Length: 261
Picture 1 (cartoon, rainbow, N blue to C red):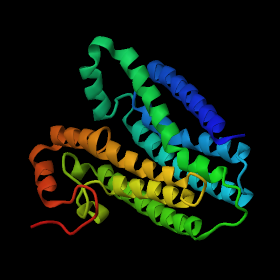
Picture 2: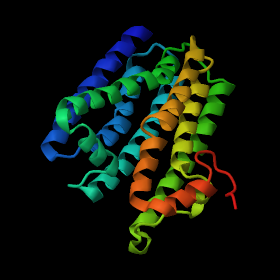
Picture 3: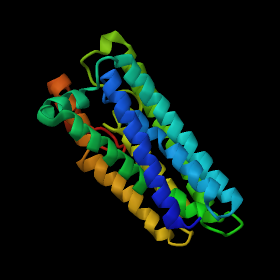
């Protein structure tokens, strides 16, 4: 199957998955599940591209395995976090309920669909790799795989450190400053972004591989300007106030770095 046809099929699949999860969110009265769905939908997209792509078998299998490992780990982590709060929603979605109260369900439906569209756009590196007919892996694929392993480990460590901090009742209302969180306010987002850099590196030698670089750039835009850092920090300031303002003053927002005095 050609690349454009596969991308269209993937877009339709993502839209259907997110529509189904929207209906689930109405039933359980918890819109936070969109985060789990967004993370998990990359697995069927990668499997779809690997199954019907015309690229080398090893390359298709490797990119599908990498995406599945990252996708399901993140989805499981988010599911556990959301399940621990249920029936309450995460603070970001509580605020959106307030902001969108006059037209709640339609706005959230299109919010869910926007997540499906974003997932489809971000899946382009997987698609490019799966239609690359070269039989052997090259240095870019090997470098991308190595960077992916580093990024996945970093993201997993950051998530575990924050979860352990939150599990201690003594830390309620305080900001985590231990482990990787001492050097970055969002180490999980930083390593998440490195995952997308790794996918772009992996896809770079494929036909039209230069298009893959748009994905980490798009992810960076969303992290800094849309649903990542801005929404997370707004909620942190609402819940932790001056403690978080001091953390903002002393700690790098994204790239891990030594704290400022």
